[in-house]
Amino acid sequence: MDFIQLGLLRGLSLEEAILNSVSVRLRPILLTSGAAVLGAIPITLDTVFGGMAWSLIFGLIVSTLFSLFVIPVTYNVVYANKPNHGLPDNIRKKLAASLGQEPTMP
Image 1 (cartoon, rainbow, N blue to C red):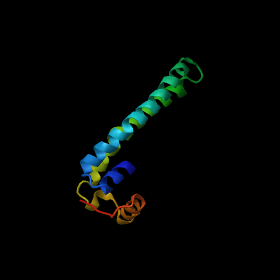
Image 2: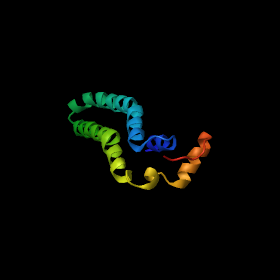
Image 3: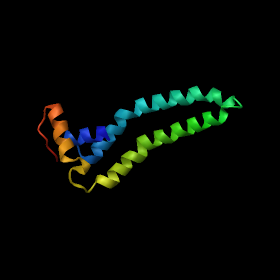
Image 4: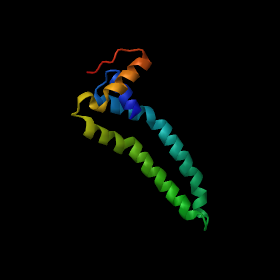
């Protein structure tokens, strides 16, 4: 959501800000979750910790899907018709000040 709000502050439309945020976060999220899943695969063969490994693997897959698809789509559905697309004025002013910009919205 931070990347979406930064994109909105920079003057992008809501859809552009969402697509930009997903494309920026895609590689780090996939690399992190992929490495954790690959590391948990050998544990699935253990009789004691196999169930924990499977829950870890499926939890990582679900959280990856939520981060890359469900949350951005939900943000679009909820804030598409709201003023400033859900970016509160106080946050907009703080972000603009930290970037050295005037707070502008499309």
